[in-house]
Image (cartoon, rainbow, N blue to C red):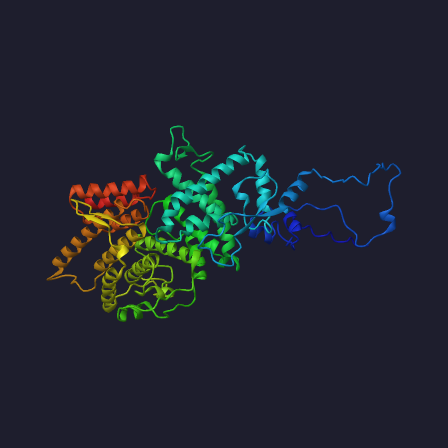
Length: 561
């Protein structure tokens, strides 16, 4: 007589969510995708379909019966830990959050109505994780953390995360929203983080690292303060803790055919890339990490596949500069468009500093290569995209087989285009005050958006002069051309630094200054000018946590030669 096969054991997570469990592995595929702990507990109880009188009516002789009163109401309470946790996970109520949908949020998204646990004992912000109706593991992990090994209470953890989120909204969002009039990273993204764990962890990672990297936030006892308040439980390794969780989630979600199109995933990758930019200084050409590959996959997937101007970069700039046309727009809007623009600036920085090809496809953004009337944010996008076009000419891109261009006509048209772009900018991009100083010019702008555009136009001009194919490489005229190049480089680097120093409300402009110093700082020959450049780099790192140590060391070596 053969022994019947044992019934398959479904993990607790799949059982509670009524999902089919892949029990052929130690960790089922569902738990691998969601990052939950896969526990398999054999269930000794088996339920029989139907009914039988002998089962329904058979009681022991020692059965104790209680007298009941029909007017009384009895509630059965099972106080076992597993059942209580299950109730906490399964019982939710819907709460409307004021301002849950920001002005920039796209219609049809489901983030205006957020589910939160009904039990008042759970208060950790991370519990508002992705769709509590569909991912109960978030609440379970928070309930378990009451008894974790660290001894840190739920209340103190909630306080830490709340302060890190507020720090992101008030301090770090400026880096992302500098050209976004709708301020998606200050208004929309923190609300989205309530229901998207990877986005929440990215925010916590960036805030924790930025705070711990600025000396003024560190108190003598080794803790950290912000705006005079102590930040509880924040340590130097807190950012790494959140970073590891976020990377794991991004890797898992980027392989999901549905999640790869989620704009919250795109935002999380962009915020985490900001963390990696400030966490480790620029080191040569080593920027091919896991996050960059994941981000490129997400960006390439979510970019619109067609454009209002379906032509190549060469066709665009070989054509006559348009005198004006009706506005044209890409298919991406709202938060996704804001994320793309930040991704462009991040990639532009890496391409410029590493002198390597641009990895984000540029051909899908031809609708921004126009001078049609638009708001300041759109003009900023146009200027940044043009700077990326110049980088593509200089170093190539993924769409040019990573080969730089040698087309003299294209260079000429790019040079003409930047001059026309500078003239066609709206009056709002004019500085409100300028004054020449001995070293850095004093240039004031009304907003960081205008300062960013001015800096990127200067960087584009710098690249075009450096990659001018017309000057002779040797012989007559070569020395004069070199002197002209050096003079222009000196003027540009001092001008970009002046823009950064006198528009400090927009810290991202110091990134542009770092780029200019890295490329042209060695052309500054006087001691006073060199000391001034070093002071700009010091401010960028000590006050804004932007790493400049490697640039500083290379510049000093160049000056010593």
